[in-house]
Image (cartoon, rainbow, N blue to C red; front, side):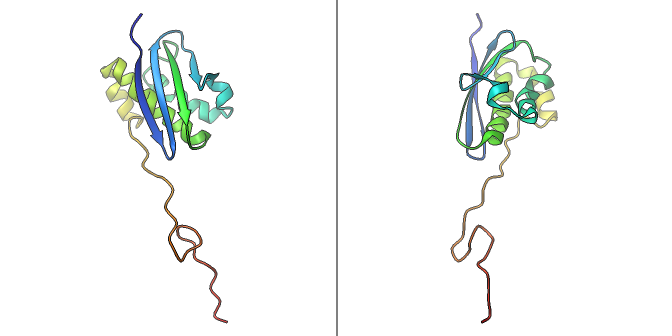
Length: 129
């Protein structure tokens, strides 16, 4: 059997470690099927996206360890991790995945709270009297 490849994906506070190997297309997240772990269809599509783009949806088994953040952040982190792991398997997937924008980490995260403000930008209510 071919050695399994691994990669890391990150988004906001979520971190996923992805292990990919030849198989029959089984995707597991934290020892659960990905369709039960991500109940919303658009999150399931996020996880499948790199496999569909590279046209290898039923050919690899994917094991994902996800932690931190919320479900959406974990799904997007898994997407990046799977795309990076596919590059480890076959570097020829790079132009296709890059054109689809799946190798780029999303840098947006929560802005820190500033002193003298209620939140990051929201000030306290001002009253002249």
